[in-house]
Image (tube, rainbow, N blue to C red; front, side, top):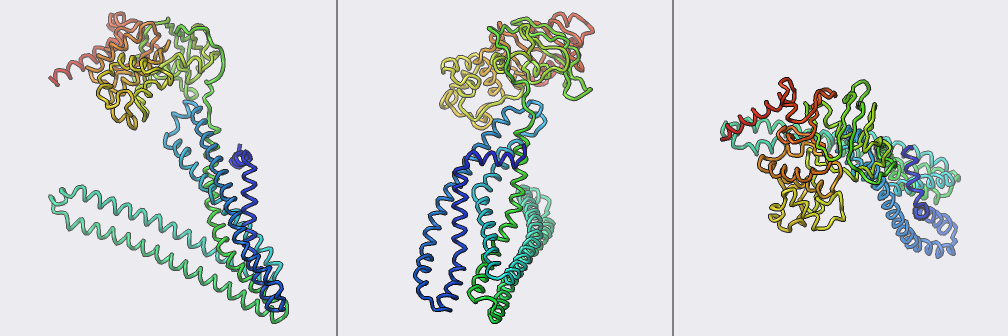
Length: 582
């Protein structure tokens, strides 16, 4: 789907209102073109031929036009505003829905700022063109076309003179504007640099005084100020030159029309009223011509924004979200059967993984960064599909299950706590918006948040600020744990859930997690190996392969075990740090 097709589809939905807006705009435009013709008729027919009977109806038309034009413009503007608001509303909603269904792969490879620019900057650009500039473009275009047709009817010779003058006027505008904008960019850059240097030196004024660098700083600032002023001077020169040249071209065109028109009148080719009408249309053509040139640039920017919006709408979807089987009950039996996965061709991340996890078992993934721990969790959450082998849930291929139904039975405590700018209660109940306050408070208590609730001015109804600014990192982590507790999942994912907590908080949370993990299939990724000693299965991954697995006791009994080496090294480091702090 092209951006033009997308735009047409957006407008067609509100075609009745859009057609009304176009009709009103065209009507107003036609009315604004009547005064020069009326003036010409007055000169030729009323004054020139003495047909004074035409004067009353012409005066009546002249008096009625502003009122008719005002009513039509009001209706047109209202239609434009309402239509543009609805179109932009639909675009923003369509774009947001598209973002919600983007694949995890796309989201991981696309900066958040880029997505926000589509939702905000590109939509605002489209809104600007819809809210007024599109109407202005249509009005100016119709004004120019109709005026040219009427002028050709009155005098083709004078029209050619006017068109040549308008062309020179537009060329002059584009020549100067291109240079003025270049100088403006340089001017902003110089001003930013000057302001930044001044701010930096003022902030470090103590250092400046301590080293007696005032004279050197004044010299550097004076030089920067001089360069900035020189760019300002160039900007003023260009502006003045543009104003002078535009005025000269305008008056030259107008004077040429008057002089040559007078010659045509003397030669008997046209009447003087036609000369006056063409001269009046000359004034009306110059500004629309410049505005059309300016709007062409803005339309190009809008076209780019529309292209980027359509690109995002058509971006890679989360193909894993699809309808399928809904089991009567999810028990939490997870099986990796010769499972392999790769993000890029010929670069395997997991290789022939075989792992059978019974319902209620606790499994911990251990290994260096990039060994495949997070990828294993992503596959369990069905963010990706395996490229080889199968992932079975209660004996069923995960690709055959209804994704939304399946994910409703999972909960995750992510590595980086995600807290919304909302109340504590709404944050905890994010996965279950209909949860009662009693359930929310119970989940908070299990996650050791009771003391925090008592501290907050409005308890669970306290707004937490942007990204949970009113909470510490550890408290935000506990909030995420409470969110998972409330969901009451069959399968629980703890992605380094306690890595951001101090030892005291970690001990409290570990007690809560031990209660929560009972009778639930739990997968843990943890750097602190002391938190997984009670896991039923510890899987040590290395470059996408299972190096070893077993219980803590089994792995520690093997003197050559990688896990044993990691555990003893980590415990020795923790002991050394404890002694240093003591």
